[in-house]
Image 1 (tube, one colour):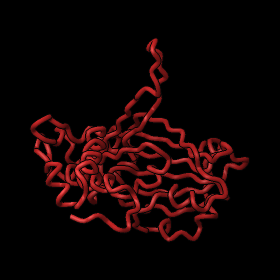
Image 2: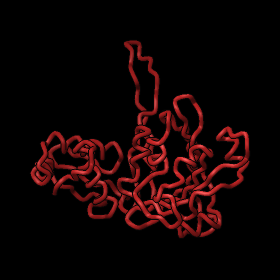
Image 3: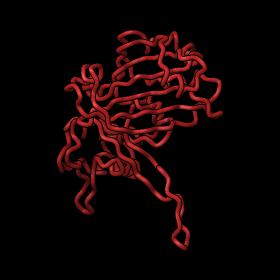
Image 4: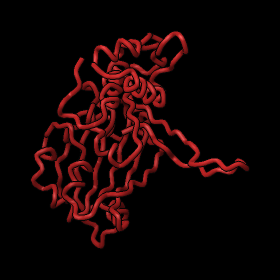
Amino acid sequence: MTLSRSDSGPAYRQVARDLRAQITSGRYSNGEQLPTESELSQSYGLSRQTVRHAFSELVAEGLVYRVPGRGTFAAEGRAGRYLRQLGSIEDLMCLSLDTTMRVVSPLQRCIDIEAAGRLRLESDAQYTIVFIRLHDDVPFVVTTVHLTPPCAQLLADAPELKADAVSTATVIGLLDPRLDRPITQAAQSITVALASDQVAAELRCPLSHPVLRVDRLYSNDLGEPVELSISYFLPEHYTYRVTLRRDSVSLAGSHTPRQLHHDGA
């Protein structure tokens, strides 16, 4: 096994991604043992510490569990599901590393009063693109992205957002380097919904099938909204998990909880 030279991420992240793909594809599942640290260290040409770091990431995601003296094993019920650890805005922008975006409806001007209000626009006009995201050629989410007119103008010539385009991009990942001010926040809400006609057709599920709705509103460092995304995930093919940890613990035991990371897309 060799690491991708085009991937600038840490080596342990690349190893974790490879193992994650093998687990979700079913190569390792339901308690099967993964290769040992020594075996992976030799096959990747990396230190055991790097491999151990990769395993730790997968343990945090709930994909594997470790038994002292025995090895590392795939957790049950994970095959066929997409799971991704996210801990920052950068992770959201790089979600495409192991998924594919297929444009259903290209970027175009439309009227949406609710979306315009959430984007704090003076007019009801904004720009919308609809796409599905696939993992191993299986659609697991359909997303509608709403953009302010200035942001849409920056992406007008992006080939990844044209009709029927297929890429490994994210809209927010395409937008951020084109902005004058950086995106620094993503406010997220999660609810349960029923699949509409469009959602059911794109995700190949029954009408009114339960789905997970995830809304994200991205803002720049001035607090100005730049993008609103509304996604519908198939629970059969997607796992979302939140881990909370303490920032600090005083001698008296008081603490402030915070969200450390969340798994998803």
